[in-house]
Image (tube, rainbow, N blue to C red):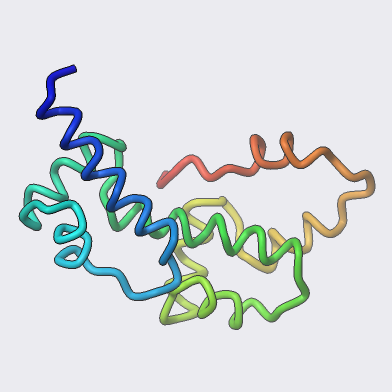
Length: 134
């Protein structure tokens, strides 16, 4: 791997780590590009080439993953969870959740709480990890 590719990968990892840490906050491309020390257009192209999805899709998936965890581990209202993970509308949250997970947040919670036997968390994570957009 060339030094330039290694530096580019590190820059993209810095931006992705910032997204992981601050997923509920409003994050925009200019701020993420500044973290990676590149232009906005270059950031979007390089992020997609490095991680296989756009920054926007990565952030949406990260937010949905966190929402999945909150739906199972808490009794918070779906609307509260929607806002807690960084979505600004229940409609866009529900639509994105369904695209990624394949069912609505309420159905996901109902199905998960109806499970009779506990399953080791490593299996649950492997089985329920969102695969991306359809």
